[in-house]
Image 1 (cartoon, rainbow, N blue to C red):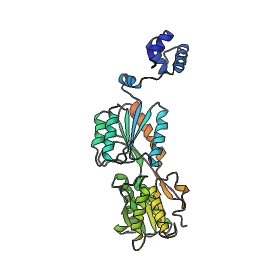
Image 2: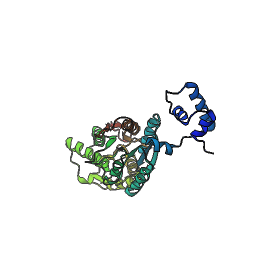
Image 3: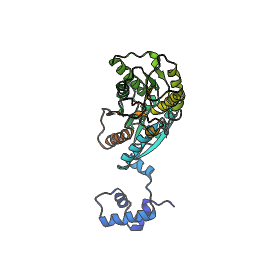
Image 4: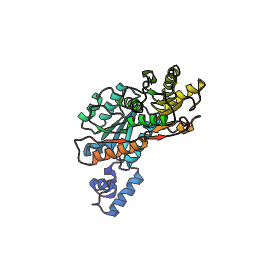
Length: 338
């Protein structure tokens, strides 16, 4: 049987308003009365009707998170940081995966909009912003994470992907590499900025790698990243002169590239030094521990949560907020030549 506020009020001989105030920890209620109500609530295992409450308050206390891949450690860590920080303020996260499918992402957003969530957090796989604009039209705050859109004003939390490319190339050059290739990711702002960081740093340091030294792996999720990395490495192995250093779009691609290089009889890092991006939890446990760029994914989640709390609990601002974190190079055996 469902226990209602009225049932608790009738049992204790108080009003429904008094029970509601006790549950909201309002100061204008006697401590003894509050203690009696909370004790009865606990014994009856009362659970508030959040749908009914949202109709009254206009708030659901629910935050929607839409990401391309739930297997990917990067997004899993973001979800952990986001949930833990929001929970402290009694907000809770509904998580959905778009599977890197733009249509599925649109469907998930439409479904969540129907549930009147308080805020959306989206790592979008869209080519344009039409589905994201629907969120704004519904009057719901939106925070983009990891991926932004040029010319589209929105709250954003992410890492400096251009800097990630810079750090990787500078490190490989410092280890004595001269012919550095890049296995690049999809044509999103993330993939583009990492590729630009690679290209700009090489040019600034006086190197002009041929176009063949940039090999695309397309969309590389955790489920197929290794396969795409192996395929890209097959192409790199045919290049002459063969690259002696490789910056990979992410760690799963780097793992595939390393496996193929070892199968081809190359030594890592002596014959080819490899740097990934993401610093996933298994990067230090590989046969050759992988040097990687830490994207500070847990902190992205925490900062996103704090941004959401400000958006929901302070007067609205017309100016979108942005928080860009600095990536960090984590050096391991796959690139350490000196």
